[in-house]
Length: 115
Length: 112
Image (spheres, each protein chain N blue to C red):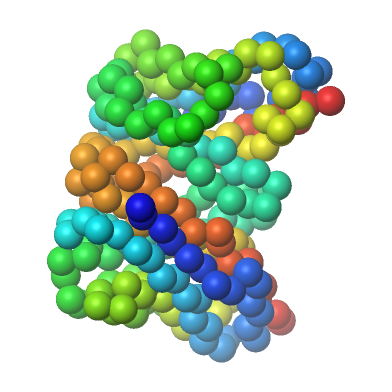
């Protein structure tokens, strides 16, 4: 029944490794997002996809690469992990983008800890 | 540039009392939407209430209501009859054309 599910919930790894976080939504939404929440709880959008097409790409290091195989999935791959990548990463979806009158539905977050 | 400011990093309120969380924003868009989200210690992000900028009437959802002052670009959240379960981080968000900006959050603690 989970609307937006992301895995894993926790990810602990060494600096320099490559890791992926998966996200799936079963709401039939067209638009999906990735957010980063830092230790001060500040939420910042990273990417947004609409029907598999990238529409928002904020200033994010190109070590971060989103991939959307279909509109129900948006995965986040991170290469060469750095200490500053430690954060909680949230996936979200909404019915449509553009004029954004649709609220976003969030996953439970993935806490990424870099050792 | 679109910005959202929540000037109260932390607040507390006695159970059953009323509390107001402030949010101001700046946008050059004419058509935008405003949201309040709640993030309890469980980390989930939960929609509390939303307001369409073109509507003058303030949105209300049970114990939650907003005071939307468009000219002042202010969008405060009022929680009436506060409950212990309202303890959480509260985020204000402004959404425009392909833009989604969150404020820095207000940590609300409801005291028994």
